[in-house]
Length: 561
Image 1 (cartoon, rainbow, N blue to C red):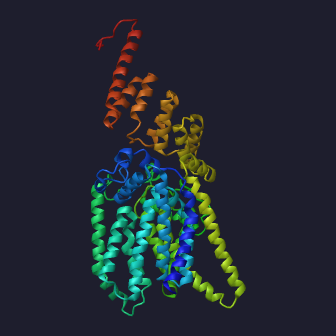
Image 2: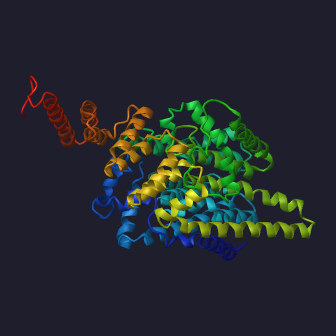
Image 3: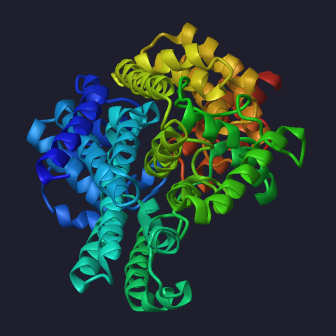
């Protein structure tokens, strides 16, 4: 095929990507966008000292100090300046990145599959509804950059290796793409594994695999230096050290062991499979009781375990018969591992935005079935026509689902209300909506959603603290005290809330306990002035009560101060 024809096909892929995602450009800021961009003006609304982002975490320390993504923040600051704070600049960038990535996936797939199968792969990637969270939500931009740069790096490798040994210029390009991708988001660290997987599965070379891997030793060591340098810098910057992320609150609240966390994720495998192959239902919060939390092995993990075994078996079976299928499955697994909770605890159970890069592998595996299917149907025109209609229907459904899902992310109220509607059994869906309603002073409705969330999952200390603080601010100290007590019963080491608890105890004349909570507030870094005020007021109230009980006479050792 000549270059012009190829670009026409690439343009059709870009058109599918644009049609699927263009409805997101009118969105505002939602979910994490609000906290990272809108409520962070000192950082986002200036172009001064952009280079200092290389010494700062992604999230500010007040929000946990998680992540190290300096290039993401630098571009956010530039986009804020270009759009004068309008969300349009961010969303247009996301849509453009998605279209560019879809073209790169097509180019990559052309080195792995026949042209028709490569087009199918890229078309399915372009319209896949699981990408909506990364595209329609501004903070998903880091996922889009990683998908673009990593796919480009793998494409440079594959197209170069199919022509022979890689030149040093290609290795320099791969190294630059790798370093950039890591500085956009951490999971780009998997690129060397994808390159080795491509060498093992796709490259047709009469040289034995062991010798080929030995020949790759020097460039792979260079990539390892890039990775280690990145991890070293990151570990010096992020608050939580090398891991750099606070574990998901459910894991912490239930004090889940490593084996139980892994069992939980084995149980969630069918959810991943569904999202890659039939993402009709999309969610922002995959949380209990919708996701079963394992407390030891059980029958709930059996479907996921069987699917895992099946995926591994398919990977092995296709190693020689269909290398592209093995490569796609391997890509999916490798790219999914950093956020899978199998290796280290992540800040969520499942997050759709993190499936963007793994979906490249999933669609390569799906697309690799096209040549096999075509060969089976070679002499059956009716069957071929039916297969073409099925493909067209799948692409059409993907476009429709993505197009209609994008506006759900226009603002927090639209997002959270839709989430409660679609996932009434997810406690965090109700929690997030309740929190928003309290912010909008719709307290009765907010309390109802908080209470329902607590009923679904009564172990989240953040949620208990949030409701306690809302009650206190509304002057309802009795129910606030109940929630504070619940908070410290499920998380005795919780450092927040002691100041508010002390105030409510003071107002209800539980003076000794008020003094104790005020001291704890000081110990854990709370407002010292307020805590001392509670201690002084508790002492004065105790003296006043003692005077009244003594018939107006000061008790021994009392102080007039």
